[in-house]
View 1: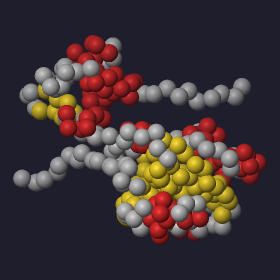
View 2: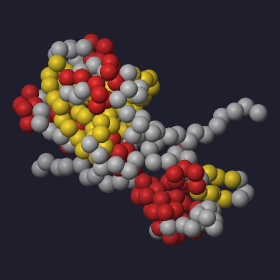
View 3: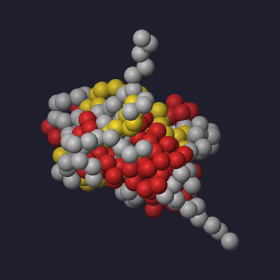
View 4: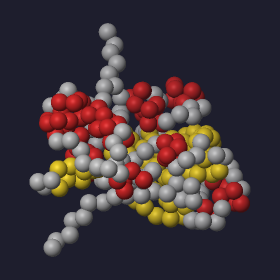
Length: 255
């Protein structure tokens, strides 16, 4: 009998969401200190180990900070940050967090000639077909981002399912997961900027005037599965007049 993988979020992830909900209900102007680990564990009905993992995740994202001997505190400044580099949000979520209504325009999904540099990054076998999906993301009908996602056709079911997939407008990562069971878990990003008038392929869909003159943030991203398999190589161009990324970083200074 065929079985389907259960999409159950780890317990620490559920605890993290519950703690975030607790933070939202706090009066942070009066007090930003969280209850002790054992109190949170009792409130949520989970072990202290689970709570500790959830708090570790929140600390790595800069949402909370710990003071030895004093306790765990909410980083109030982090709550004003709408879009972060880490953890990475989906683009439509970024647009919503920035205060706009998102929409997605599927430009084209097509089979292309193998580009060996990209195929090498994706660790594709010589006989595998390279596919690119191009999408335009809008925020209140303003151009917000342009994305080109490259991946191997075998991740979407091969030639037989390509015709149906070529009209697919939702998340490519969800489609890949549904068909192959490969879940995007982490990525490696190279950061650059680009003149919107020089973005390859984009001028065929929109006018230069619509793009504006402000440089776009250009991310070259290699997305890996939870088994560390490279899945998708993405070229993402962001209009930072609409989406402004922020990052809280832990310091590692030798004093």
